[in-house]
Length: 82
Image (cartoon, rainbow, N blue to C red; front, side, top):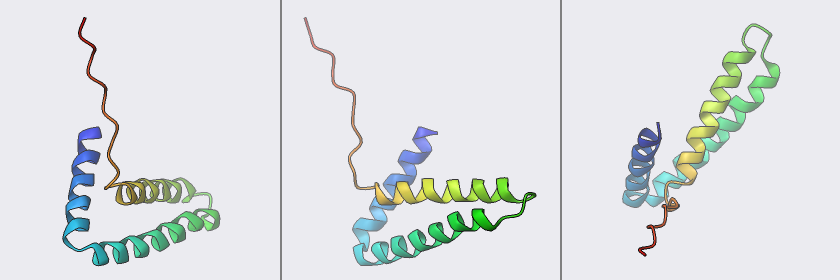
C-alpha cells in the first residue's frame, strides 16, 4: 500500500509543479467536497452510515496525500559503520 500512496503523491507533485495555480484551485475544491462528505455522515440513516463513513475517511486520506505531496518523507538513517 505504501508504494501506491508514494506513486500517487509523486503524480500529484508533478501536477502541482506543472500548474501550481490550477493545483491549488483543485485542492481548495476538493477540501470543500471533503467537508461536505464528512458532514453528510451526520445526516446518514442507519443503513448507509458505514458507507458514508468510509467515503469520508477515503476523502480525508486522499486530501492528506494532496496536501502533503510536496512534504519530504523521513527516511531511515544509514547505519553507523564501526
